Picture 1 (cartoon, each protein chain N blue to C red):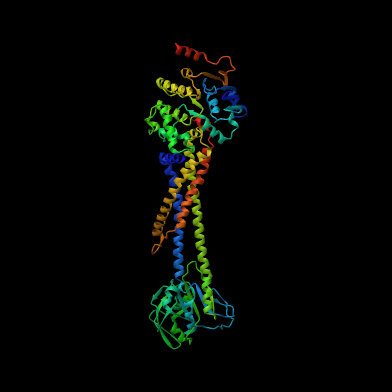
Picture 2 (picture 1 turned 60 degrees about the vertical axis):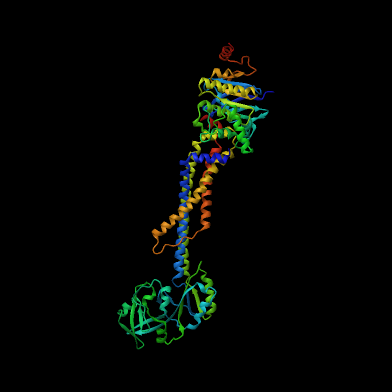
Length: 244
Length: 385
């Protein structure tokens, strides 16, 4: 049985005549340890889908199940617990808390855990080491480069060892070299068993994924196993280029 | 990393906002403390002065007749028969339980005498106690000696007499040593002389017509003192001058109510300043709170951060507000007090109250912003990211 199951997800905003359908009748399944990219044009519903997957935006209808947990059947506080225990987020613009040091930013998801400060610190240091940022614990976010910020964001997302990592355009603000480093980092995490769902516009980044969910006008047009074609032509072409 | 550390670091980062909230709370607390301590100090001072000076207990001979005078107007028609009080009995007043509260005992003997073609009321008093019992008296000239008299302002005018002249009472010539400045009381109509002199003139040696007592009392247990004096003077009627006491207490009570009203308004305004500032702060922190919520902070965790920040600022404001309020009271008393500046005693209840009030004001004012922050939809917050 799949680890993540989305069944007939609809999300509508507004009321009556002004209603806007952000996503419509989306169903898919993702196995544990898969690396999935979500692609689509702007306004296709990628971010809405990601926020639903992030237990932050209840669908208008449909079910979203992770590890046999019907996420939106949980209370809001339980949903917060779910986010803390099951999900790691990497945001497009890093979104580090500016007044906390690199180490403190990484320790944030551990704040509410009933664990000693020493253990929390050790976990954060380990996460930072895994993304290659061992020497900059006490710097503030405005004292490090964009690539380093992204690494801190990834470290924060994985510090509590969640089974699922959700990434929203993780390389949107990075140069080519740094993009490749970050993607290699995500690939490494995936190879260690972490399920990754990444929203991206970048064909190059999507090339790191095992599967692509393609959205168009709020509908899933490619990528679910029930569909014939799961890899977009441009990605297929990219794979061929990489292989060559 | 703990929620406490997040709150403290945010306070340090947003010093300007924190200072603004602090200022709102400090002004609120300081004003309330200043108003209350000012009123308290003034009340104590007024009480002290009023209780120390001026008669507030009256002792008259017991009678079965009703008084037929009103506002100084005698309606007559009733025989004026009453017992006199023995002067020797007055020593008993100094042996009552609350004797330490007796500031002055002023015996008075009264009688009508003929001066020229006019009938006047002659009053014999102890001029040593006049300063305490009648502090409003201002005398032109001096208090009289054994052969002298002091005229009330109206008596001097009607009798056409001046300082240095003499008048004759019962064939005895008495020199006018002083004239009272108008008091607006019945004293203006009287001729005053020494107690012994009048007793001799009226053939009332050893007897007293009435006694005025100034009681110096904390919280004014006047009724209790009246009972105690009545026990040692069974033949006399002892009365508290209730109107003075009640009037005084009513005035102070109104002043206190007014000050509490002002305090409530300032408290409300201070609370609104905190509320508006914290609302703005929460709006500024939408993204940050969105991140907190996205990574699994519960609503109560977010609320805790806001409340902790408000609590810290409020605690500091409570201490600073109290000190500033007391300082303001000192300055206010120096500016507005006539005579010596009343002391402001260390009031632990007020200090504790100010601290508690600041905490309550801070927490109550931050309740809505905290609730608003906790209810931030993380997806909405992320949308703004």
